[in-house]
Image (cartoon, rainbow over all chains, first blue to last red):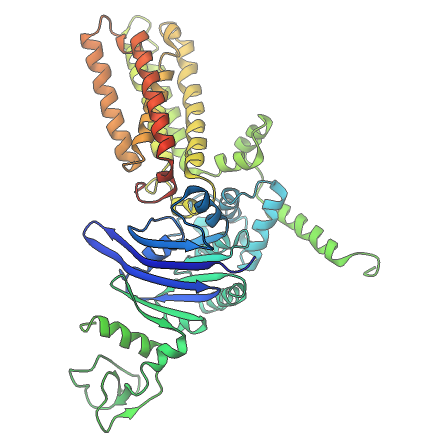
Amino acid sequence: MTAAHIVASGLGKRYGDQVALDGIDLLEQGGLITLLGPNGAGKSTLLRCLATVVTPDDGSLMVDGLDPRREPERIEIRRRLGYMPQDIGLIAGSRVFDAVEYIAVLKDHREDRRRRRAVSDVLDRVGLRDVAGERVERLSGGMRRRVGVAQALLGSPTLMVLDEPSAGLDPDERMRLREILTERRRSTTVFVSTHMTDEAAISDTVLVIAGGSIRFAGSPGRLAALAAGRTWVQTDLPPPDVRASWRLVDGRHRCLGRPPADAELVEPTLEDGYLLVRTAVSPSA
Amino acid sequence: MSQIVNQVRLDANWSAISAELDAPKASMAERLLGRLRVPGHIARLVVATPALRRAWYLAIGIAVLIGLGSARPDNPASVFVLLAIAPALPVLGVAMAYGRSADPMYEAQVATPMPGLRLVAIRTVTVLVVAILAVGVPALLASTTRSMAFAWLLPALALTSASLALMTWFPPRRATAIVAVIWFVGVVVARRVGPDELAAFGAFGQLGAAMVTAIGVAVIGARRSSFDRMEHAS
């Protein structure tokens, strides 16, 4: 199976008067695509549309040429999909194995032994096999998210949609997640949302979303390069017209925007590029 | 040894054995369903749906109340109470077993290839079976209710199908509330204006219930796609 081919054109979604998505266009096949954006930017809504659980009000979405608005095609897309919602919502009292096996049943793993083996395999891959018999309420936040990743990995999906999979993970867990995502992106189109800009460094494509629109699409290197020549450090308080600034541990200020003539320019990071794009959208941010 | 044993097969065997060891022991309910020849994956689905547990507790709790209420053979009102409350029981059970507010795993399961309507149907049948056992058995045991022990079944099907049909437009709890209010107002009015206290459960009532069931099933079938999306399930 090859990675899912995603074509979205003019995707729009409203909740009452609030515009959640406003004309999103996408063309992706394979690789790791990271969605960056502030709270309420539309990341989760876009991921829900890609996961076919929410129907866009405008535009079209095709996954491998299949239209999720048609029931048989939607079911076929879901056979190829691994989805982890932002709210994992594990049910108190159930065991880790049960929580994953439940989704395995819904993913058409009917034969008992094969299903248990598939569950055991994905638990092994996310490092939860040792706690397969634990009650889910005893798990840490990071472990709960790994259960969600395990559910999404079931059935070797060619499209994975993971909403903030790294939230609450400790550094070791984040490293393991990175390994899984890096491995999967060879054969899978993986969409991941995150608030942590450093998480986007391993991705093939970064999408910066704000106000329901994509404000940047490109490689992490290109995003960081946007801030080249626009990032500097200074000892004095930053002028009011900088896009963003914050105090460093050495007492100096790191600033983004139009640098003064004598500015001490520094190498920009992914975060600098992201903040520059974000503040271009919302100057008050 | 490694020359005569296929390592790949050995690994696969070990993997299968350890998967069986990882799997928790089947619960009593799951073993019971297995003996009733329910396929393993369906049994897993039923017992692993914790949202159903609340529905079962509710069904059993109300059945006990109804049993106590109908234990007075000299009080014909107890039959009315039984027949008025019993059909609403599966509806409440379904509402408590379906939707975002009832089921923490709702969003993850919507994104699976299992059609939403099929999942709802499995849960509905489970709730109906539990409700039929919970209400039917006490009704059969009480002498006053024996003749009408199953008069509530068609109304129960009607309310359940009407409720599921409304769930294609409204969130489950609102749909259930609308159906429950209409039902209780209807039976109380029928009791006052009808020829006898149990008019709502007579031949005309049963015919009406059959019609509502048929219409409800038709609407559910026509609008089944809404069970595959999150929008109406808040």
